[in-house]
Length: 377
Ligand code: GLU
Image (cartoon, rainbow, N blue to C red; front, side, top):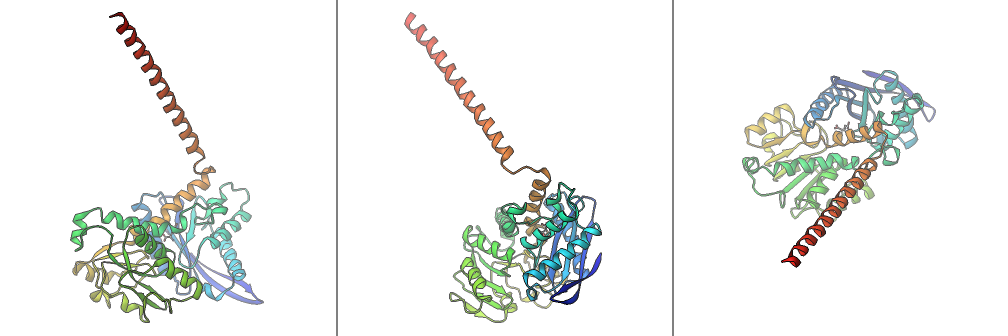
């Protein structure tokens, strides 16, 4: 579905175009992010909705596939304008039956995050005050607005888990021309957004991998001894660019760094980054698709031919929707995680204590009988 809607921003009327596509509604609600990007178009949204169906099926999360987009460059608007636009977009989605807890549940994607999800949930609540499940109309909300801890880092954590799982299978690792564990493996990450940042951080800090290059919009940072991901991230937050980061060499042409030698390449930015044009020059053993569709169909064939293992996006980045499922479940069940658990733990504790008490009494009893028997003999 395509929507066009006007919004008055600083006295001027601007018309925005947005989409929401549903690929499979065999399982309801359908699920998938909403992205804010100037390059967004209908074809992309439809393809990404299909990917969501497969993603949910692979991790066995009972949702159908959907995706949404708004054609906008969010960096060109201030907070108030973005709130106005988001609320208006939400209104259109709700009215047309493309946003509700039981039918269609959006989530963050490129260019959107917790803030946009909070605005969406709030807009839905005002339109449907009678819906006791209103919180479940979107996931990826802030924790104090019905979100759950761990959702923000979930997709990056999922990338780490997917790679850890891969390295638990020595035959597959050997087939990819590697051995051992993630420790010391040279990893290049493209994109230090939510997914790339968390994946790189966890892989280097928890698994001992070396992040030898980080490719961003404005170039790439290279350090063969391993970059400190948190320090790079903080530098970007402070300076708005990777340029000038002290502990690395800088390469202005990020695309070239995709072809630098490494063990694992993690494209975590946009789709269509590895194409027939550069596939023959990619110098890695394993590609983990953290972004959606970073390897094109043509490039996929070339890479396979060259013996490079590809772990597909539908599995590698499914951590986000997995944790979204927990958030949705929590919202519709209206009970805090841990509340039931605590009671169960308490009960189990009592049972064990009673059992131990029973054993102690029995032991005393048996010892008593033995002592009596001994004194008689
Ligand atoms: N946008 C994310 C994805 O593409 C998350 C979707 C969700 O949580 O529903 O998988």
